[in-house]
Amino acid sequence: MTALINWLSQNWLEAAGVITTILGIWLTTRRKMLCWPITLIADVIYLIVFYQARLYSDTLLQIFFIGFTLYGWWYWHRGLAAEGSIRVIPLPKRALLLIPATALIAILWGLLMQHIHAALPYLDAQLMCFSLLASWWQARKNTINWPLWVVVNLIYIGEYLYKGLLLTSPLYAILAILALIGWRDWRRAERA
Image (cartoon, rainbow, N blue to C red; front, side):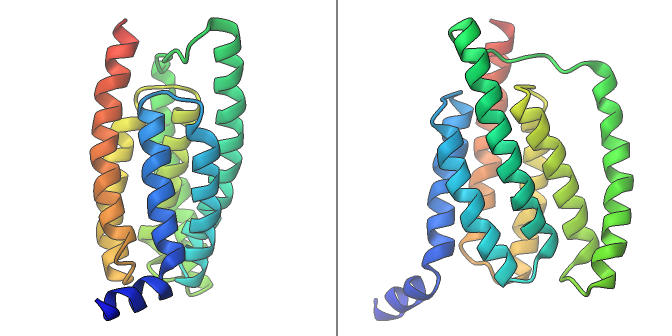
């Protein structure tokens, strides 16, 4: 018991990030406005955690997440004020072209990350870039964000295990499950 308390006292910030992230994503699957301030707190916490782990692409990703969180908060609030509910919006087919473009940008970003000796530069770059794409689609209320999050979160599990982030790795297993739930619920909302 003492070992657990000591470990948690050394990793309290990561534990706080896990709790706020789960709560924020769960609220997002339910299309609740409270998801945005909770997610903003999680973004800031994980910015610090990933910087300390030398996952520089993930650190930068948190900065982008802060921007997407603020944008999503505003965009959802605007839609809520106009329509009275958070309505899911279908993704235009041409937006799927963002997938190969994102892969190419990630390769270039990986080259830069390798140059500055980041841990796992190419994997981290791919995950960062596809997380940005999923975040954009989520902020825009496009249902397709959820299957992309499932894939990204499953890959993140291994990356974080490798880097010794023992609370964050199982978090991403939970996030993959929440993404499946979000996908199911948003598809229902889209059909309704």
